[in-house]
Amino acid sequence: MGTIKIAPSVLSADMANLKGDLDKIAGADYVHFDVMDGHFTGNLTFGVDILKAVKRSTDVPVDAHLMVSNPDETVDWYADAGADMITVHYEASTHLHRTLTHLQQRGVKAGVVLNPATSVCVLESIIEVVDIVLLMSVNPGFGGQSFIPGTIAKLHELKAMCERHGVSPLIEVDGGISSKNIAEVVKAGADVLVAGSAVFKSEDPAAEVALLQKLGNEAAQEA
Image (tube, rainbow, N blue to C red; front, side):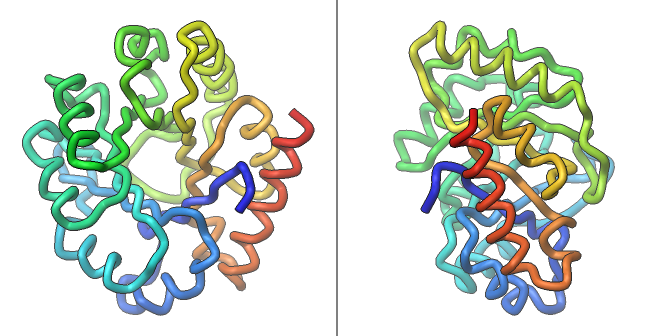
């Protein structure tokens, strides 16, 4: 396994053939699992039972991204269901420090997500606690959106902040990632790349995952 991790998003998978689609991405580093509650976002997606089905269907670690209005009250649902990593939105979490440390005490990697309009400066007082920082490179709610170019500057700011604090959380980017822009995103500081449509809408999802891993790791070596 290389330095750069690829996390295909099941938001773009075929729910009528979930096990088959998960088999196609068995070479991925994570399965990205988008939970939307129809309130924090304008869409409604998956809950605990689907996460349990994913865990039964693949050995790939599950990265659960909670786009919900009440993450402080619901993180345990997804930890109990077997999520290996859980990220919650800064914009929605009232007790962020408590929620993150609680997850870590449960043995789950814990992270914080920032929407495109949220500055990385809000992480100054929490960056030493987090295992993962997820930067949204689209506005959350739907798959298939275009990458927001301003994410590159945010990545540079986040890397500088991590260096100031002497920490190295995983830096994840979600939205509009493809073979065309993965090198630029990795060179700006990303470690984990979420790719939904680019993987599951391709003719060969397994080959697409391998290509993204290859391009990402080549870019990391050049950075």
